[in-house]
Length: 249
Length: 249
DNA sequence: GAAAATATTGCAGAAAACCGCAAAACTAAT
DNA sequence: ATTAGTTTTGCGGTTTTCTGCAATATTTTC
Image (cartoon, rainbow over all chains, first blue to last red; front, side):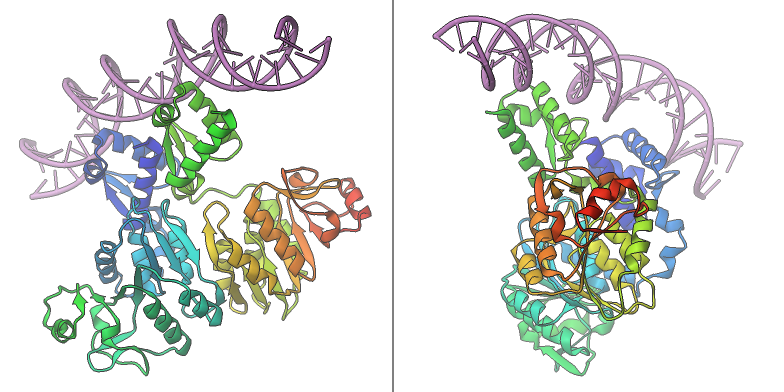
């Protein structure tokens, strides 16, 4: 591993987790702690991070900007993202929707992963763009300011022409009886197209949204393959979903 | 193996894997490491890659490491942006390209302006997205990590179906004799399509790029309507351009 | 305040970069 | 084809960079 490469990895980790420990970096990258320390020092001199005893902190950590735009239930979403990442293999074509959970997924992708990501979500695209080994396909159309994703006929027809290996969707509501439901007409159409196109559909959702219902129906339970939440798979809440044939993780 | 051939191979490898090692290239191509090193140095000078101890990295990788790099000549670009903003009227459809100058323009848009912006540049889109009164149309396609804009056949055909009132383009080089020139094949195609589609084409460029030439031609002077730089319009440098019928500001 | 963890410093071996030079390959023109 | 001139390449020797180790100092933690 090249020196610059290693330093890039460190910066990535700092930006991702807001802190890193010299000791863990040392075992992760398999170099001596001295080397890590020298790297941290250099990066600190360049202003890329803040060196502290035992490791380093990100600039954002001290900034006034960061704590303000805190995402609701972010820790849970990080857990979900970590589970979801494991499903992605090198070379895959992955279609992703929008939402804060998907953004966490985008941030959690390991640097070594090389795959193609297709999305109309601007925040997700920005994350993918910063990843060294990921190809990005942008789905164009009119940008919805609320959801920060592109919506419309163009986006729909583009999605219909794809056959991705995997599709990750953040959802609003899921219920045993009513299936997956949402509250935005255009978003629903987009999600339906994505579900139909993908070989395998994986839903990401915090457990709070499980067993809730919204006015517009997206699809039935049988249309999806997998559900990832922050909870353990054998939590009783999931029993009916597992019985309905969904792979819960 | 010819020198050019070898260098093309190296660039290909860098774009593919985001990193190359001098040692492995040396055994692969079967030339001495010195030769590889000289190649890497030349390619680095041409901006095709970034040379580091032990090999080279792609630009895409390097961006990860240095996301906070400051924009070259930013103050001048702000001056340019301020001039450009004045051309945009409420209700207009505006097509914009990529580059740091365009990003400054996006940042300089007054809050009261309500218009529709069309672009494939992710940094620009992010700025437009945060603006309260601007509609955004995203041009989708494969995202180029170098230029951070979408490039490809889809993007081209989408642009061809548009007729925007105004098109803002950041440029690489402009010269009285050779017109507007650039150094990226795909980007040139995109710019040509944008110029052809728009009712009015406005170039944004720092004066440093005026009277310089690049290998690939975009268009002739007569194809554009306006040139905005940070200098005053009656600077002698612009005399030939004004005589060629371009509105310099 | 003592023990544990982390930093600093100097050093040495290995790898890589640099420099100058001469052989080899390629160009261009006789 | 030959020759003169330029470019490219490989090699030996030197310098620089990188990294791990060990000895020493400093900070943290209980």
